[in-house]
Length: 326
Image (cartoon, rainbow, N blue to C red; front, top):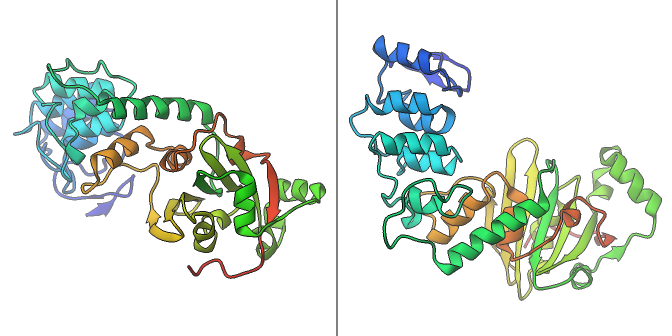
C-alpha cells in the first residue's frame, strides 16, 4: 500500500491513486473496466465517494455496477450523502438508478424529506403525506434568513459565546468586566493582536446585544468559550461557545444554568448516527457554518454579522482569574 493524494491509503482494489477528486467519469469507467472494485475503495464505498465528490456521470456509472444502490456506509445511503453535501444532480442520478430517497436514515430523516428543508425542495417527487412539520419549516426558514444575514466571511481564530435571553449590559455585569476606554489600544489590537502578550489580549472581548440575547466575541482568541466565562454567562439561561481553531477546526461548548453540558463539539459538521431528529436537521441547515449554528442553538437572531466581526456594542476587559476551571 502507498500514500495517495487526499490522505488515503490505496489497497489492491483498483483505486490506487484516487483521492478527493472523483469527477473524471472516463477515468472511473476505465478503472472499472480494468477490474476496480465498485463495492470498495480502501474499505469505503466508491458510490458514496462519488455522491459527494463526483459528477452525475460518475454516480450513474458506479450505480449500475453495484449490487445494492442503497447499501449503507456509516449508517447512511449514497442518496443521503448527496443530499447532505448539496449535490442535487448526483442525488437525482442515484434516484434514476433505482435508489430510494425516502428510506429513513439518521434521526428518522430520509434523504428526500431532508431535502425539503434545503435549497432544492423540488429535488424528488414527494409521496402523498410526506412534508415538513410547521416547526421544521420554521427552522428551515430561519436558517435561510440567518445564514443570509451573516453572509460568508473569514472567522478562523475567532472565539464566540452566544448567550440566550440577556443583553450586552447584563453579560458585562455577569462577567464583572470593565469597559475599555482606550480606543487606540483597541485599534492597535485589531490591527495586530498577536503583537501583544496573550495574557493581556485574551482578557479583552467585545459584547453586542442582538435579538434573542447577546454575543461575546474575540476575533483573535478563544476567551469567550472558556469554561469559566460560559458558566458565568449561562446562569439561568443557555450559552453556546465556539472557538474556530485554525489548527484543528471548529470547537463547540454548551453551558446551561452555569453548568458545562457539552464540550469538544463540532458545530458546522455533519450529523452523527445517534443524533436526534432536531440535531440532524440543525446539522444539515448549518453545515459548514459554525457561527450560524452557534447563534441558532442559543436562539439568537442577528440581522448582520457585526456582533461577530465588530465593532461590538462595547469592548470590555475581563477580571484576572482562573477561567479554565468550572
